[in-house]
Image 1 (cartoon, helix red, strand yellow):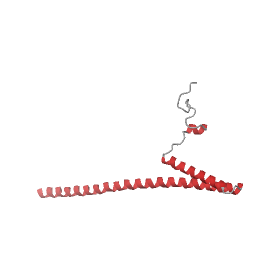
Image 2 (image 1 turned 135 degrees about the vertical axis):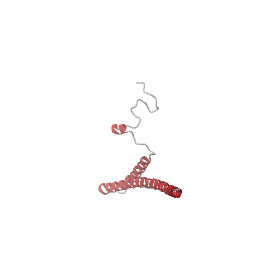
Image 3 (image 1 turned 180 degrees about the vertical axis):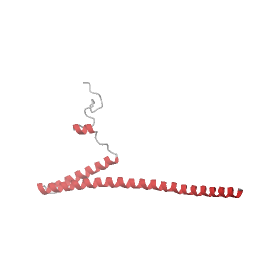
Image 4 (image 1 turned 45 degrees about the vertical axis):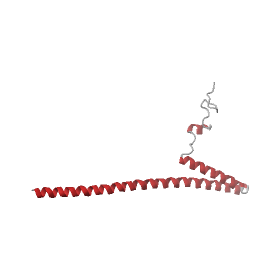
Length: 129
């Protein structure tokens, strides 16, 4: 009977050791999965930002070319709209990266400048009226 108890205890210890080893491998695997997910997220953001920038430049160049073609303005339409597309692309990238805040929706709908119409003048003082 004691031999049987000892063999059961030995098997239990081996099983505990194997489980601990496998749990260690699983934890290492989840760390690697977390790093891979973070890396993929970074690549996705990079692709989004670069595609927004390139799209804005291409749209500006295309509109400039069409303006030059139909209006006969020479290279000036393409030059100006290409630069405008470049500026729009930089602004879009900065907004997407969170470096520049987009205007408040109420100001966009009303066509007002941000901060206008809140009872303050340009110096930040309250209106007397």
